[in-house]
Length: 166
Image (cartoon, rainbow, N blue to C red):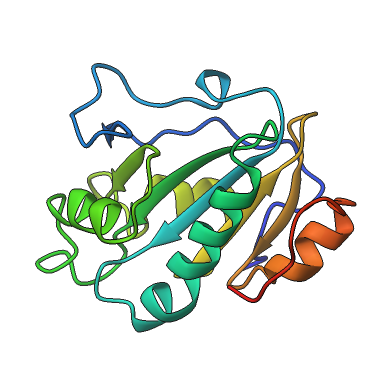
């Protein structure tokens, strides 16, 4: 399997189960067109994933705090490719509150007869934690297990942003 959709146009999101930034069920699924026109950062996790909590969520929180007012938009998706009995929908709000993340959270399980959730299939992600960054033109410019926040901000030329380790 070729991981990541680098340099390709980002596929439309097919995740249908979402809560909004306040933890309320969304009336309709989040689509890329619902997000701001600038950069989009999509973070994938599973509740039981140690790396998601030790590295992923802290990195996401750091980037959100630094970039939310600079035209960036964020979404989080629990991609349930294993442990469906533990990585349940109720974990969306738990993690949203635990990390103080005011952004939409989606719950993505494999469609009937499929092995992987829609995001993993469409974006060729390799598991969790997983960061996908989509540029303002709609192209995937980063897709990997890690996203170094200092290098990312430096690559963006974010000189006015204080660079600290997440």
